[in-house]
Length: 288
Image 1 (tube, rainbow, N blue to C red):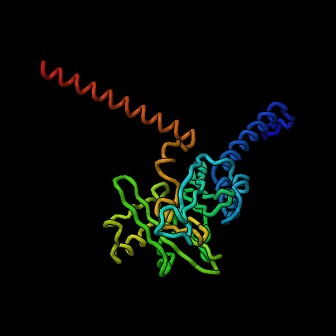
Image 2: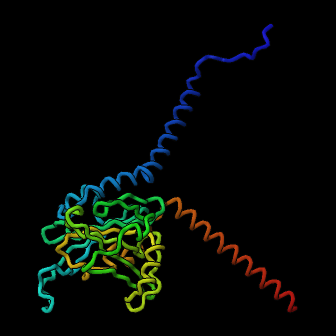
């Protein structure tokens, strides 16, 4: 008499179907997670690296789809008469794309729909792309301002701004021929993450110690690449990223996160309401 357990080796069609269905469902979940996180981040970085000044808006739309916002803005160009109002100013179309929950893309296009400037901003710890700043590379959301040398001499900037509820900081870097004769503006925007307000700015004037202290602590969350024909003084510092008042009302959270947060808020509200009722009941009993 054999003491080994009896194993049924017959093929069970229903069991096999259940296993295949479970595997297919798991594959769909993993694929959806990949497309919404790591895979999407990789596609966005690859698409951004294909951008350059003077590409057409239709080309950008093929890479990122339709923009969520579009408005007009006046920008000063070099070569105009600065003493004459309106001379040297042109109207550009500013378009903004929300990159899911990861960040924002902004382009500035002329009347021929040529992109004269474009910027990328990270708003998530999961979106830290390696981007080119001239002949160098930085990590948005990770690199500090001090990884780049001081702003180029005899050029504009830096541009700090600190208000009652808004802030921004931007600085210009120019590399000549190695940088394609383009202007690279890096900084910290209140639309991005991580955010560090330029505390210590007194009427837009900084001491050397305050500036260096801020540059050592602040992490770059925005990068703007511009044609050297644009006078950046007319758009900085808030032009380095999308207008926070324009994008802050758009709920870009993942639906599952939003549902979980709303559930937690409702539970906290009910718990607070229950505690308040118990407290009022106990106080009424003491008074009686």
